[in-house]
Amino acid sequence: MLEKLRVEDYDFILSLVNSKGWIENIGDRNVHSKDEAIEYINKILWTENFIYWVVRTKVANTPIGIISLIKRSYLEYFDIGFAFLPTYTNYGYAFEAAKAVLLMISKLPEFKIVQATTLFSNKSSIKLLTKLGFRFEKENDTENEKMHIYTNAPLT
Picture 1 (spheres, rainbow, N blue to C red):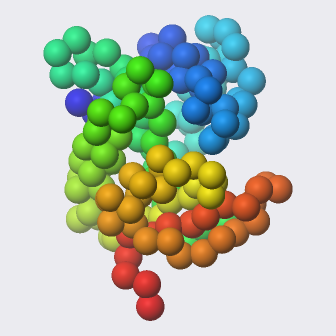
Picture 2: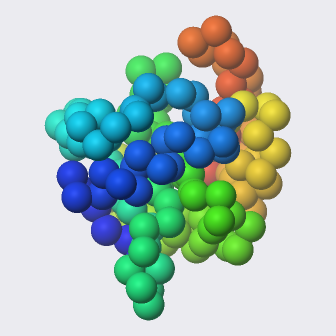
């Protein structure tokens, strides 16, 4: 189940942004308390061109991950992102949730093409992007890191 991120998700966000996978592949956001998590969520909610969905289990409504769309200054199109709590990785949740978001936005002109960025070392994200139909487009030096950019559009 997908729901828009809300302030009440602070406990989940606090756990997610401090998980090993988040810190290694996305970066430390210095969010270490309830107040910092609420501030972080509010920043997301009030930033134009940031859309975050919380992925929840159907039965218990437990938050397990996020899918995001962010319009980054160095990309031509919106960047789809995903992150899940370690307990819920490798079960297909990220694929199903990302696929649902891509289907949901596919009819909107601003989302006809979607991009994704990841570190070359993040093999699980690359595998997921490939499974979702994304193709490697190029390498880009961003914020002192080499990022791989993928797109869901046919390359010309």
